[in-house]
Image: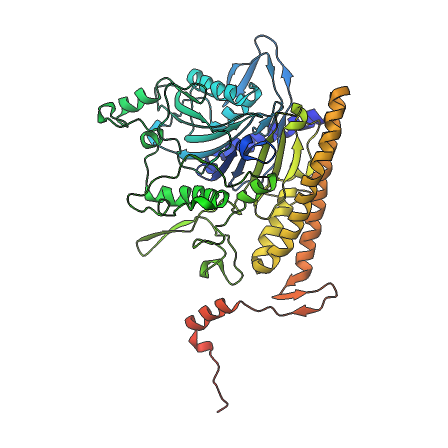
Amino acid sequence: MDGRSWAMKWLVGVTVVLSAGLGQMAQACSSIIVTGGASTDGSVFITYTCDWWAHGTLTYTPAADHSPGDSLLVGGRRIPQVPHTYAVMSARMNEHQVATSETTFGGREELRDPDGLFFYEDLMHVALQRSRSAREAILTMGGLLEEFGYNGPGETFSVSDPREAWIMELIGTGPGRRGAVWVALRVPDGYISCHMNKARIGTFPLDDPENCLYSRDVIKFAAERGYYNPLSGKPFSFRDAYDPDTVEKRRYADTRVWSVFRRAAPSQEFSPDYHRGAAGSEPYPLWIKPDRRLTLGDVLALMRDHYEGTEYDMEKGLDAGPFGSPNRARPIRWQVDGQKYAWERPLATFNVSHTYVAQSRAWMPDRVGGVLWFSVDDPYTNCYVPLYIPMLELPRPLVTGHRGLYSDDSMWWQFNFVANYANLMYSHMIKDIKAVQAELEGRFIALQPAVEKTAVELCATDPELATRYLTDYSVGQSELVLRRWQQLGRLLIRKYSDGYIADENGDVVEPGYPEEYLRVISREHPELRLPSSTP
């Protein structure tokens, strides 16, 4: 079986799993947008974490030509196929460097239409198969929804290509009225944006098609449903109409927005008041100019955030345990004695299926310029691998295994084991994990110019050989990461066990518990105190 046939076999299997569990992905993702003018080399970046219980994996749909009368199966129904479709990696990026990501804001529940055809995952995938630019992908999604309907929750999308990055928001129009209402804004060059499970677009211009696209009835429909009063004198706001604000939403979603902005632009001193629900506080801007241009490493780092260094630092406090673990078991909301509580919701969480950073570059051939820095499991403790599109085969570590069966050959299981084992003595083990992560990702970033120089030269004489070269490189780096994480897991088992830390000779030390934690134990259990003298 050749690489493309093998990829298609995996796609069919994984699509069944995705369709069965997509509803549980709702309200649990994070995305960052970085325009070319905000990055050090002109790259456009969008990021994604898919926070879901499932085993993370990779899929690939090759480019294909289609005959008149061909159809495409979507949601159990068939729609007309177009003459040619482009290669797509995991409904995330295509061969023309167009990329998408999403976060669910939910919005008004009465606008869900069970008879609509498209769910957001299908919508992203089909749009990427049919689009050569971000603008075209947005218009394609809008057209598909108008013709066939939408059955998903309110969504925010990042949509990018080598020159532009957009933020798009949409929601269905409810039973009996096929379609969706939506708006999309181009992020100004030199700026960054982000969205985290809450609608972000407020007011928008109605007469600037270069920078703003929207469905023709986005305002009229809101007025018909009573979500907006045109006679109020107030400008129309998409988020106010379709995703009404609550204090709980602010804390869950806007805390992450605040943390991205405060790290990318510390000079602007963004206040926590809004995400804490303070009366009269203003929403965070839709986009900001970072204090300095961001490198690829900076973008990866923004994804790895537990609010470190703030009063919401999840590695601090009693709930972090004796060794400062930022991980909190779900559900993160609970009720005790009639009172409601919630853990903080960070960008990096251990409940992640897969995560990626899509990098698009206008000055390179498409088959070299588009890189999906892809990984699985928790972004804080995993390692991103460069994948170039199109590909002739998929890395086996990224398509092996499933949630119900452990596999040594599955990258997801190796990342998952290391991350979970680290919770035993997190503050110690995270140093070993971060060292390997930095070593590998630093190597990939350092190699990128040389690898791509060779690929660009090959593109000029033999484009197919360039694709084989980059495929082999991507596969090889994936296998390297798998081996290193297998070694890392064995190191952690040998080094940390039974509360001891062992050196390479097997000699152990007793690290004990941190003094701050021992103070808490002393207060809670005074009976543990020893007498000061012998009777």
